[in-house]
Length: 412
Image 1 (cartoon, rainbow, N blue to C red):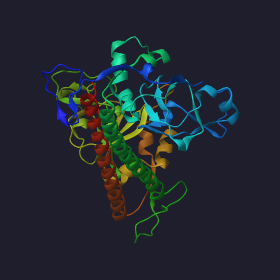
Image 2: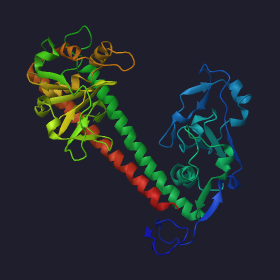
Image 3: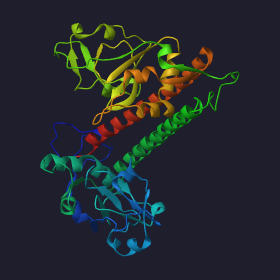
Image 4: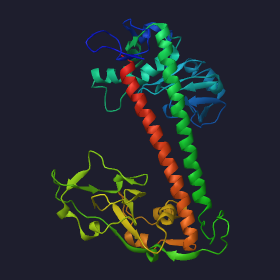
């Protein structure tokens, strides 16, 4: 690829494939397509039938995953104008703008509703057009039309008036193929990540006792004894929560004030909205947190977990801490993610508008616990699985960031 000299002010992208130097042409989408239309909500909403009915939420990473159905009679009559054809481009025009997908033969017969525009008979390379629509075109439209509304949407007239900056057919094909390959790689990594998460869910169900049993379905070789019934408080030195109130925030502080929403996928996540406090605001309990401490969200969102790893933090009331002492901490961290424990928590919440998980409920949580050696093996197994999931998540996030960068540099 060749990088464009910034001093040359032409309608060209910053980054191009070698051999291409011509300026791009600005085209109105509606002038280069045979049809732009949209669907209608079915009269029958039973979800029963033989025809796939595609909604915005059925489009993920450029792929269509139809899970809704309508009857053939509606498809042929009331919804006749929005029957999908092979190679149609679906383009979301309500709610989440700019989701795109190509209709392939495998999902036909199919139909769609008014949140998706159907673009048919277009004079563009397919992959170039859907990438352009999902990238800069809609974002630029919204930038120029900031009064789109609280619920973003585009009319069919606006879709037809969208300006697509376009190179010649050969360059379109190269760009389209490049992003198709990148999207396929992202989709592959997403499938791997989803599979790992499903595997973890399955292991959590099989490697911990279900309600009414004292042993799990799946165990490591060499272990046969019944697990012992214990309370969570028996294996922890302390269970508590954070400040019930608002601290004195300080822009010059060096301690982050965190709540349950900062606990994400096993880590403490600091965002630009996270406030700072000074060290003097920290309680004795905050200062006693250590690497045997598990943090858990207990207000609003229930049960999100994170390891404490010596971060400089002060806890708010929606974050509880559990300092593990007589159990293996990795074992407990995994146990807290099982459906048995989650259901126990959800069935014992207090509050009306905002649900809360009380500390007494946490302390009284009943566990079935094996020997320390078996705990350690189970804990290490899930620790390794979590690390693998985190690695795949980082790879996926990196690919998405790379795509974002290419979209900015390879389109006008």
